[in-house]
Image (cartoon, rainbow, N blue to C red):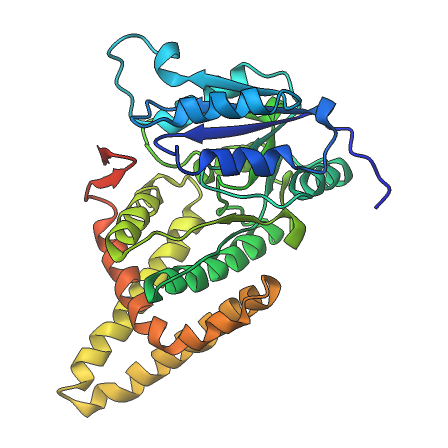
Length: 349
């Protein structure tokens, strides 16, 4: 507890149309239990159509002790420039303008606890990691759809931690991600993955993991958990998961593709046998066996996540959420590789 971190950190906050929440995000960063002289914050306004940039400027004026800079992506691009990966370009631009050793990314709609950066820095100094994935969870859920997302996302966090721990580095979240500036430049940044609108986190992780197989770590600490809100309705949730699924064809590690394919087809087996069992009872045993395997496996992951995040009350959703989970896995898995999706007011593929 008496240790003092010594790592210079740059927190990069890309933002597009986040006027309603970016001040709260920056406020949480300003309240970090971290030496001010080691902290730089860069907010990048990605062509916002609301008052995002003005909110950042107001925050700057009210917090002169925080080393906060605003970069407008529109000012850095040639007039009329069209990109496929605006968020990646925003992050790349910010990294190019900082000299800090450790880059920490978060989203403008996120809230970080006071020891967030301290936890990341101390972990980095102990391990020498090149990239650190850290926990994210939802909060302030107000509907079944949002609670379903929260429960599902906790299971994904458990899978993230387990995959990184076992050197199967395929999952992370840009809302809470840290990597060294040197490693980012050594792998060429987003070069080679900049045709994808999404993937500023997982695809970059795969590049760094390929260069530094032992350099990827997961920070399993509640104090390092970033909070964000679930999508407000089913439509927004589907758009989010279509965006996430669009990255699946771009993983170089074929083990990742194999795992995704197994999960996808296993869920299809459950659905097909469930439908067939309605007409022929001979299919019922296989349906029940596969469904049982899925339920037990899911409960292990979700129970672990709910215990770690102290959200055990969400487990009451487990059984009703199973049907929704089945449908979204096969639906998104099928459509995510060719349907366009909406992201921050942009229609993307």
